[in-house]
Image (tube, rainbow, N blue to C red; front, side, top):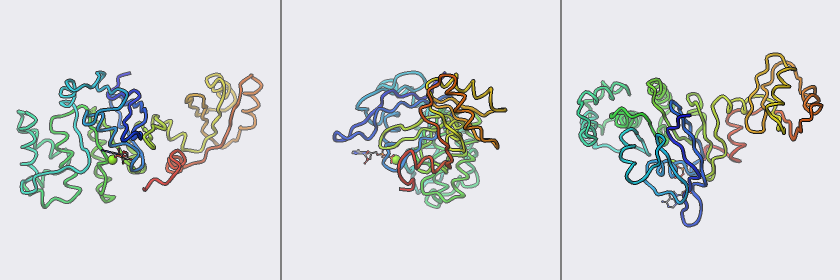
Length: 306
Ligand SMILES: Nc1ncnc2c1ncn2[C@@H]1O[C@H](COP(=O)(O)OP(=O)(O)O)[C@@H](O)[C@H]1O
Ligand SMILES: [Mg+2]
């Protein structure tokens, strides 16, 4: 597996309390990874450690398969575009001029990169306008253009939809899908799962500094949907047995859980009997009927709009 971001036991203490608590992140090449957690969960602190802006109290960060150190980070940053919090610009300069300054600072010889980036984020018409006259959504898009200017392989975006209206959020989502289609890897943090749920391929749920869950979108949605979950001693054997009983089952094995998506027929009684008869220890079987948000709230034990 080729990981673009991988952390092992990553932690950050502020005055002895853990803002980030031994987090193992695994972001694969081509992922749109949703890094989700309430305000104060530790998302920004984690992201700052990924970029070597804050030193970890413990653990390691690997980018593109190589450990991040004070000296390696410069090489990595050439391949990364970032938006952390609201991007700032010279307000008396145009969007185009702002990007051109960044181009020169980043040592990008190709002048047409500015036009290309403006196009990609749909700001071509506005490039001659002073950024003072840009709406919040336009400024946010200009931030994307700046992050994309050097054609990075990886985008790290810290709550890029913050403060945008629903239309602006949809626009950013569409833009991210476009960017992802170019083979880039994206990590996007948000405190609102519903805002990014439609586009992410993988999700990590952070709560009080701990990564409560990390899974593919498929597994995550199944956990959220109507399903029966069996916690068993031998999940692979159990899945095999269920496959023999249920017609065209939709089964996922995740750790010691076997998750069976519910179809019209309720076979739950038969299934439990079959598992037990085959010496499988069924520690738990439960019907899960939660929406995505319900599931998130259940995991984090509170509301999401904090
Ligand atoms: N520089 C700092 N000094 C002390 N505490 C901090 C500092 N930065 C963040 N924190 C604390 O760490 C926790 C996580 O914050 P943060 O990473 O900003 O969360 P998020 O981005 O998920 O909202 C919060 O409790 C916050 O108050
Ligand atoms: Mg934050």
